[in-house]
Amino acid sequence: MHISEREPFESWLRPDASGLFCVPGGFHVDPHRPVPRAIVTHGHSDHARPGHDAVLATPETLEIMRIRLGAAAGGQLEATAYGVPHRIGDVTVTLVPAGHILGSAQVVIDYKGQRAVVSGDYKRRHDPTCAPFEVVRCDLFITEATFGLPVFRHEPDAREIGRLLVSLADFPERTHQLGAYGLGKCQRLIVLLRQAGYDRPIWLHGAMVSISQLYQRLGIDLGDVRPVSEATDRLAGEVVISPPSALGDRWSRRLADPVTAFASGWMRVRGRARQRGVELPLIISDHVDWPELMQTIEETEAGEIWVTHGREEAVVYRARQMGRRARALALVGREDEAE
Ligand SMILES: [Zn+2]
Ligand SMILES: [Zn+2]
Image (tube, rainbow, N blue to C red; front, side, top):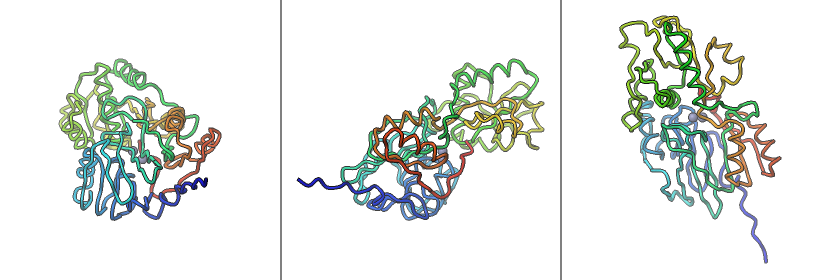
């Protein structure tokens, strides 16, 4: 009996000038340029771009896009909950939690008995501000590789938060200025501090305020958070969270001899911390580290792995050693995330 060859994934999922295009569904995933129909995995600006005619995403991602992009969030915005299958063209699409930030999703695409999963950005650690990553068994797994080198191993979050608390106790006369990405990382750090028993007000740079208010509106309890603009003194001994770009710049002069901290997976690289003048590097990331990436490739049981968004070569090499077909997927508009 003749066993029909399966259609290569490339025949129905392919990168084009706008991003990753699903041919039988007629949509892009996280397109970089305006397209007729987009599925957006999460609200970070290298994934959620302005100007699409139609956008399908989780309700949280659409809220984030409305705040950050206003009317440019898209023409027709369609919210879908996790786990609900949608028929789009000749494929079925289901969004599943990615554990990266509030509302983040993997895109599960079923077509002619084949299943492809586009991970977007994801992590495996517990994050009290979003739904946990779900492993979906599939035939093709398209994974990010932000930290796709064996050197990247993130520390336990509680240990890193503990180091911040020790520094606060050691330097009660200095502000602790914590650089963090404003969407996701900032709010996660606040909740991690709360879980570690820190109940002082936490002060926010103006750039963090509206997204943090959205998190609170969507049910993430951040405790007492206040804009730095409302402070009446130089916040000695307090925690201030700001964008990494504000570390050491003019803005910081209002603070009391700040201890500069930076929470990022990149803090594993000592040179990066030194370069930025970071006194207290905290290795806390919203992406998988190397062992978690390998574990995830195993658990999806996918025979084919496409790698994008970071250090593709090492992941492709290791996936092949693991007996997978693997290739790097060059997509436009992806840089090192300011995570
Ligand atoms: Zn992201
Ligand atoms: Zn990203």
